[in-house]
Image (cartoon, rainbow, N blue to C red; front, top):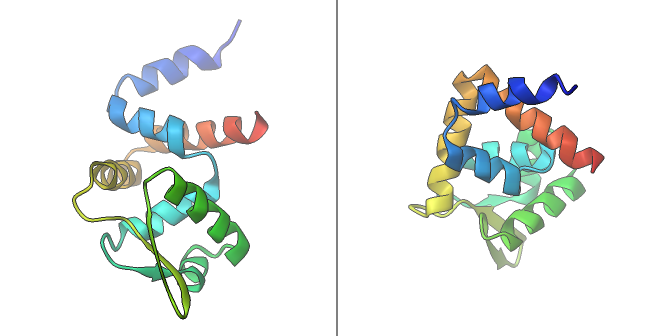
Length: 126
């Protein structure tokens, strides 16, 4: 008997299905979660790798890997200059709206945070 499934189903029925779908498709590591949280604080503004590594307290290599994934998935924009790549969440994009809603709701919802963490842990085991 799986005790965890009914609890997750009950908790997730209270959460916006678009947010759940986004978590399932894109939030596969704690580094991605941290990067999206950092970028959601400054939607539309460009951030450098070292700034995001500092803000998230993560190694720059892990940040770069997460950003490359998120860029490839079309969530984060990348631009380059002489100093290196810069990243941002684009303004008024549907995925940016979902990211912003997800971060805002997770800030106030323990059950949503539990869903995010459970999904990341499962994604890391798979």
